[in-house]
Image (cartoon, rainbow over all chains, first blue to last red; front, side, top):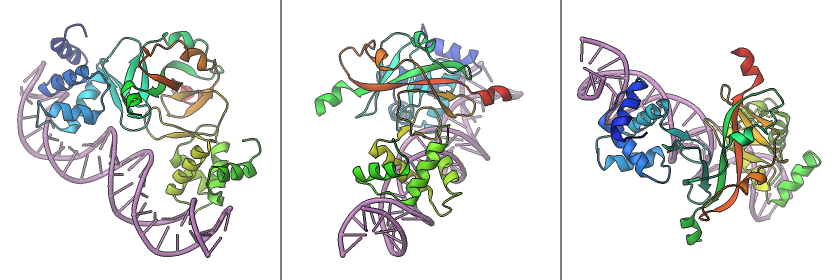
Length: 142
Length: 142
DNA sequence: TTAGATGCAAACTATTTGCGCAATT
DNA sequence: AATTGCGCAAATAGTTTGCATCTAA
């Protein structure tokens, strides 16, 4: 998370996974896309470099990143899951028109969790905020 | 939203939909289940009263409720979408073990939205909080 | 050397759609 | 009477899995 490809290798190995050329390519594509891509979007981009890669391998790679703690699967909203390799605390804003997911700043969620009343019944482990809005590109189009 | 079955009929009609026995049954099941059910769960429960109902009809009914503004589709998290007929402001806690969704109290989200920094780029329309935890039943089992 | 990863295809889950018939307004 | 909804089955989207082969450690 500090270096680039070499650290990915070490992180994967530490989590009991292997580092393959396919995974390095998926990692670079994921980090290069500002909008959190879907598995399909990553697949199309990676295939330009590694034409023989399969979609299942992309899913497999993303799962190994999650397991190693360097990637988060975002399943809120309609449509396909999106993936985020960012580790700093931040929130996500999903565009109601194009479905893309953007990072936004804001106070950390921990401040809020303390104010949540679970009635003492639940063990509150965490949570996240899902914001809905319209992105710059879609505002321009409408 | 104030009365029961008769108001459902009026609400649906006002939104340009019809009120059928199937839809009334779906509505009653949805309101009778404390845990926001999936379409499949509603289907199984409704079939006990209306054995000939199909899953597609359940989806169709839920869509008409959404269109009429009396039901909300909750698509966060893994697995199937869950449906909520509650209209008061509240948050949802999803159990990481069983996947069920529970209502929890807490400060309204509007207080928070003001603190979110969208960089002036987005039109912020709304959002919701998704909490993760472990429900009473699953805590007992583990 | 060997456990784990790859690529392919098939399976699977959740949801939507097309069609002829039936029921609601 | 005219729509709209119904039930069925097939289609679709997203994701997972089984299997034979290959490769990183």
